Image (cartoon, rainbow, N blue to C red; front, side, top):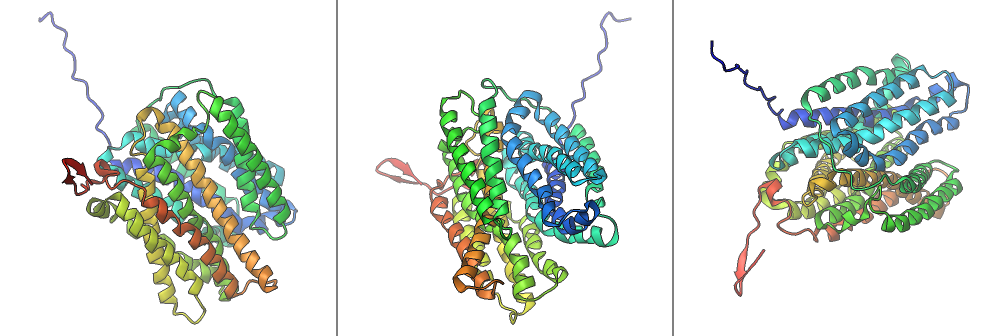
Amino acid sequence: MSDQIYQAPMVRRAAPNFRVIAMIVASAMLMENIDATVLATALPTMARDFAVSAPAMSIALTSYLLSLAIFIPASGRMADSFGSRTVFRAAIAVFVAGSILCALAPTLSFLVLARLLQGMGGAMMMPVGRLVLMRSVARKDMVSAMSWLLVPALIGPIVGPPLGGFFVTYLDWRWIFYINVPVGIIGMIFVSIYIDEVKGKASGPFDTIGFVLSGISLGSLLFGFEMSSHEGEGAFSIFLISIGLIFGIGYLRHARRHPSPIMDFSLMKVPSFGTSVIAGSLTRITQGAQPFLLPLLFQIGFGLSAAAAGQIVIATALGALAMKPMAKFVFSRLGFRRSLVLNGILGTVGYGLCAAFRPDWPMPLIFIVLVLSAFFLSFQFTAYNTIAYDEIDKERMSSATSFYTTFQQLMLSLGICIGALALHGSMAFNNVETPSLADFSTAFIVVTLISITATVWNLRFSPTSGEEISGYKARRTKVDGKTKT
C-alpha cells in the first residue's frame, strides 16, 4: 500500500450567475417596497379594528420611516463588522419577524412597535443588499445587475396600493404582512446558498454620537417631508423639518472631527460618486412626487375611481420593466455621460407632459406617455446607481452604499413634500379648497423644473466615466502631443 494519503480534490462552488444574485437582492427589496406602500390602502379598515380614527393610523406609516432613518446610516458599518451575507440574511429575518408581529397586533401601540422592528430590518436590507451586489458581481455585468435591482424600487409603489385593496376587500388586512413570511424564508435560503460572506475593514470606533445626531436629523426630515402631504399638518411638518436641519448641521460639525463618521461626507469629493448623488437627488424629486400626484390627478381631476386610476398608473411599472434589457446596449454605444444627459432630459420632460393631461385626452395616449417617461427615468436611475461606485475603493464601498441609500430615501420623501407644497400653494393662490386641473399642472411643472436642473450636473461627468463598466470607449484625439477626450 502506498505511504501517500489520498486526498480528494477540493470542489469549489461555482460562482452563481449575476442575475441570480441580482434577483435575490431585488426580491427582498420588492417585498420591502410593496410592504411600505400597500399599508396605506388598508389604514381605514385597520382603524376600525383598532377602534381609532383613520388619521391616527398614520403613525403606522411614519414609525416605519423613522426606523429607516435611524438605522440606514449604520448598515454599512454592520456589514463590515459581521459580513454582508450575515447582515443581509439577518435583515430579512428581522423584517419577517416584524411582519408576523404586525399581523398579530391586537392594538395600535403594538402595531407601531412591530413596525419599528420591521423598519430596522428594512433599513439594513436596502443598502446591504446593494453592497452584496457590488461585492458579488463583476464590473462588466454591473449595468445588467443594476437594471434588475432597480425594478422593485419603481414597481413597488405602483403595485402596493391595488394589492392592499385586494387584501382588504377579499381577505383580511393581516395578510398584507403574512405574505412577507414565505417570501422572506425563501430569500434567506437563497442568500445562504448563493451569496458569499465578505467583511470590510473597520476604520475606527463606532460613531455613537453621529448615530444619534444623524438618526434625529434624518428621522425628523423624513417624518416632516411625509407629513407635509397630509391636510392640516403644515405647522407640524415645518417644525420637524426645522429640527432635522438643526441636528443635521450639528452632525456635519461632529463628522469633521470624528475619524470614522457614520455618514462619510468626504465621499462627495469622489467625482463620479458626488456628481451621481447630486444629479440623482434632483431627479428623484420627480420620482418621489409622481406616485403622490398621479393618483390624485386621475381621481380628483379626472373623476376616475381608485381602481381605474391604479390601472393607468401601472403604466410606469411597465415602462420600468421594458428598460431592463436595453440599458447595457445603450451604455456601450453612448457611454454614461451622453446617456445621462439625453435620458435625463427625455424622462423629466416626459413627466412634465403630465401637466398637460386633461380628461378629453385619449387614455391610450396618456398610458403611452407614462410608459415612455418611466422607461427613460428607469434607465436614468440604473445609470446613477451604477456610475456612483465607479471610483469607490473596496474599503469604502460599505460606507458609500449606506450614504447613497440614505440620500435616495430622503429625496424620494422630499419629492412628495415638494409636490404637496406646490399643489397646496397653487390652491391657496387660486383660493380653492379642492385642487383643479390647473393646480395639478402647476405641481407637475414645479417638480420637473427642479429635476431638469440635474442636466447641469450630468454634464460634469467625464466622457470616460464608467468605461470599464459599460465597454464604451470615448474618442480620443491628440492636440499638441497631448491626448484629449
